[in-house]
Length: 206
Image: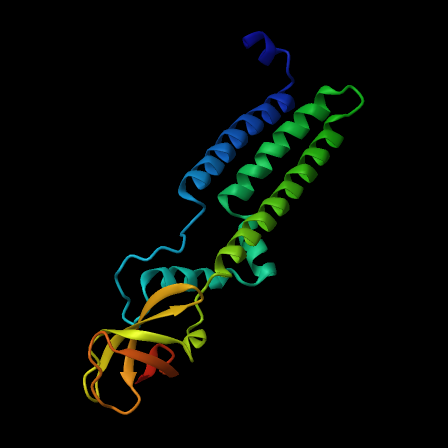
């Protein structure tokens, strides 16, 4: 190993160092993402947020911030994946070109830099696409209108309770008020007629 390193020029040693460090961190990050399922998934925890939407909806709503492709790709260019991907390709391509007698140092550095930048763009696009794929599952409360459900927590007269409704094939619990201001007890079937305050369902008893 020592003999191999001594046979390399200073530039080639730099390329090798970038390739080793970049590849190690990059592969580690990919492995961790695979293990963690690449971020939050749609999981019901049984706890409701203050708006009446359970926690998986909050996570999905957070991901909506990645909906714009250009801004998303720009952001991920400087992510850990993007930077480590740059160094990985910079080192590998630079070392390969430098070892070829036909290429000088200037061409090797230029080629390595180009390969690194291209890798950053590819990673940015892939991460952006995955984020948009996740955010496509975001629950839109407007889809609850017209759906039938049941009272989860009694809606008092003129007050606010909770109902459970299937929205986009997911059973969700929302804050709700009665359309006629009358009490609707737990277990009663209801129909969603509208939404108020962007987070509270208006229901009527069936």
